[in-house]
Length: 175
Image 1 (cartoon, helix red, strand yellow):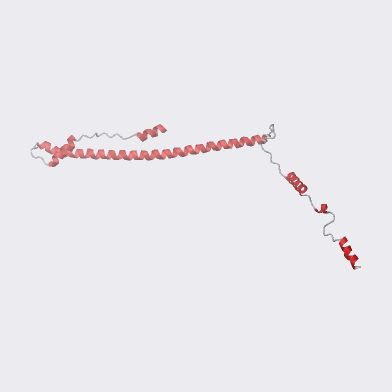
Image 2 (tube, rainbow, N blue to C red):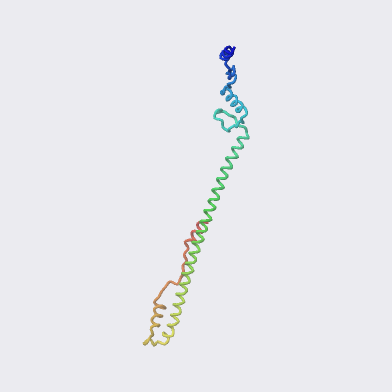
């Protein structure tokens, strides 16, 4: 009897796998497509202002209004930026002209002061010479007489002061 049990054991081996292997395997392509279909159904739809797929797509008045508003704001901001740039350039130019005008006035005042000092020296030299000419004793003259004579009589500098008006003319012409 022992032989029968061993042979029976061999004839009916133990099956560790299930009898229906097709039921245990799940098809991957079918589950992927069903998941993709569910995701596609749940997606939000975003409409573009211009749909290339629909060339005769009609727009409602709101889309025209928003497009106009965006274009208007873009152009308006461009004008504002250009205005600010011109304003900055004008301020910089005004500062530069003010500095140049200050330098010109400073140079003119220095030149006027030099002319006044030269004129005062010339007058002082002439005042020094007056007693010698009244006395008419010019036989023995000191060295300072000759210097005052040359500076007072022979030294002819234009006494009319003419200021420089280059920057002033630029300011007048620029408005």
